[in-house]
Length: 499
Image (cartoon, rainbow, N blue to C red):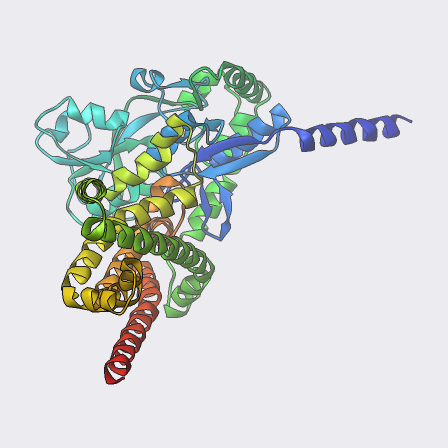
């Protein structure tokens, strides 16, 4: 009887969990070890100590999880826009950050650590870094510490891997970053070493949109429970991240025998490939990711080019043949779009337009932004093509009893299109490469795939060749199609001329 009752209770819990709204949480998992990242041994699986914490929180709240990938710079704007419920990505609890978001209780505290090359001596304190070139991540406590000394030449990076790579290559004298990052990126490298005592204090918290106090309080309750029953201790110990500072924060002085199996798994999975066969096998394992990134890149680029061609032609016709006021508006559009950065346009369409009630999915926003941007350049191409068609041909068409619209459709536009096909091909290849910018609005295309793989395995050369080859293979067929289309237009013109 007791077993039957227990099964009923378990079924009730499972049914309630299945019907609960998913807990949508976001992080930048592209190059984010050990926070949230793709398992090097299985790139389709997310892992990381913050991933484990997010799963534990959701389980205690009785809700399934829904992960949302977003670029680091877009995490808080996406939270404020309502794309997800919370952000877990090593967000530092600082007075500046607290002005924009709500924070949970700290789930991890650490300090800044200095990393130098193995053969360097003496750069083991902040004072010793005076007059040197030091790398760090932008918008972090470490960066603000370095800014306090005007003699330090600061290099701020988007990705921690680039900072440590530049340190190894001699472009930096030292790197100052969170101890968590230094442990996974600096300490394992035989060419680098951590020096000096821990500096300062950094606390990470779960971020919520302003006003979302209900979820914040629920997460705080879950975190308190994880501290009391030792689950947070167990998670951090598996990742080799339990420290005296965490023992002080949680008042947990226990020393359970927990093997750092997650740390060991990561070290083994990212160990340098020995021999050409192992390297080839690793590159072969990248192919599914490359294919996924290539398909998304091609889809965004092709759809955006359709928008660019259609809108560009309409703008060119308005400027050439439309009423003066419409021509002026078309000119204003072209000048504004060409005079502002594409990245700003993408961010504006995705993050600013919801303020006026226009919410677009990441894919649609990427297509619209790229299409509207390239439409301005296509408009200039078409305008040049239209101007190159002799006015006498329009007059001849009108003399043959064509309407003005028929003359444009059957005489002027086909000739203009034929003239600008080579330029359109170049523009499409440029658009194909510029599609990398849509990674800032949660789309993982080829360039973002390169960031993930190269930062995971510290292999910029081989992975870069693979990504470059993928872009080349995507662009070459369109060059061939453009030549075929141009030849067909020319053949058609010759036949009409012969007749």
